View 1 (cartoon, one colour):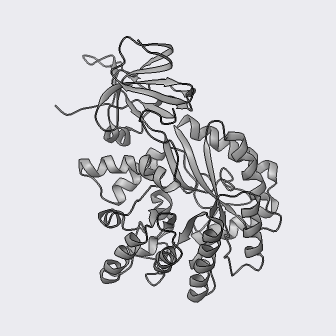
View 2 (view 1 turned 90 degrees about the vertical axis):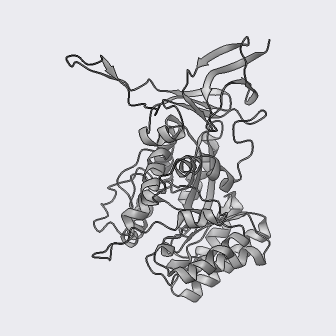
View 3 (view 1 turned 30 degrees about the vertical axis):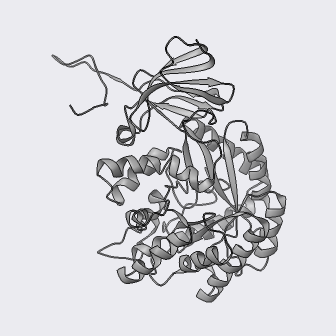
Length: 427
């Protein structure tokens, strides 16, 4: 008879198996039939889905929860959002950024989101955002993995101090090298920025994550350069391209060449469906492009693709709740991933696939893994996307950090049941 600190019984796992999970300290000690075991605390999942925690591989925490300050993005475009952020970062203080980011991390924990990669602007001589996010990373470290990307928002070559400030940010302890080649003055400058930033990453032994081709312009092809540099510098498996929305508008012949190059270079990709379909196509009348990159086509070539949240209540996006299932739900629809296998993959894109992109250690449901997981009011991964249900319990490193009651409705209807649950399984 085994004894655990925490025991979760009768859980439905994402792979369809049913089992118990025994936790000792901050690790999963056993998975399977643990009947007869004892624990300091037992949680009866009773057929609920038990999943690894959600992972957001693309976010902007320095800007989050700032919506309406100093004004609202009237056009809803990417460029006005960048301009508005330029105004905001001039007046925002380190303390304000820290307070907003910590409030967002509270939201994230309540939704079972326990790992986030956040881009932090390095086009600011004071590096207030970097200072703030490093404070936040240290504060949340006991319960949330926050990975920071040095992101020269105004262009690595376009902004006169971006290079020096990006290097300073990396010296201060920022984890990943970022960039925005399509925002440079010319296509050639964009290519040059990709080359130099990848060289910096190779020299320092760091990962790369670039905002790449976030535009409707089919001739924005910096991801091709990113793939080339990944191979040239031996960075295979360490480089991610975020957004890649221009691929939505590229001709099929060029993409048939591009995708194998990305696969050979070991690139991963992070589309951000909530933001991509809101921001892209703003210059179109009809037919109107929606801007999501070619998710299914990349996956068919073996490219790892994860869903990103990108923005919540900031200069670019007025909505958001830190719920990665909202992101998966929207991505499923826009990418038309509606077969059972594709819907399950959409769930994995908010969990295990994104964990690969972040190179998270000890992530998953297996003996010896870090004891971080979430119990959802759903029977399986597809139902979780359909319902975006309550996170009944969120466990981080062996400790229950959040609990939410079920959201069943009470009815008062003649001849009908007294309550209703929206969970449903086909016979």
